[in-house]
Length: 85
Image 1: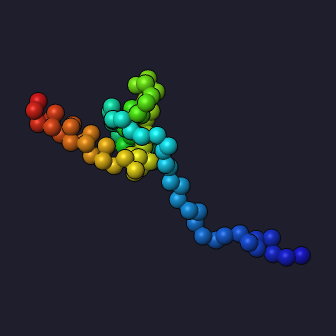
Image 2: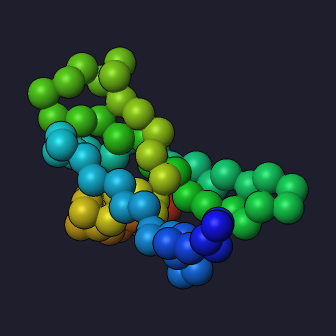
Image 3: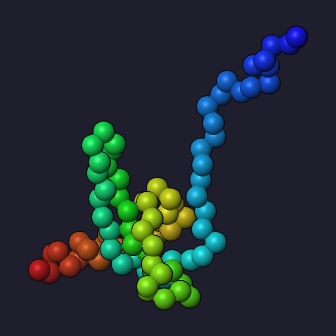
C-alpha cells in the first residue's frame, strides 16, 4: 500500500481574499475591535450603493482593500472634524 500522505501539500494555504460585487456609497462609522488574545483590528460600517442605509454592514478594514480610497476619505473627514471642534 502507498504512502497515505502522498499528494498532500506541505505548503501553507493560500490567503483568502474578499472581493465585493457591490460598490461603496460611503462609510458611516468605524470601530476598533479588540478581544483578549487577538490583535485589534478596525471595522467600518459601509453604506452600499443602491441599498438602503438599513442594510449597511460592518466590514473589516483588511477586507475593504479594493475601497482604500473611501477609507482614506473617511479618515480625512474625521481629522477635519476633530480639528474644527
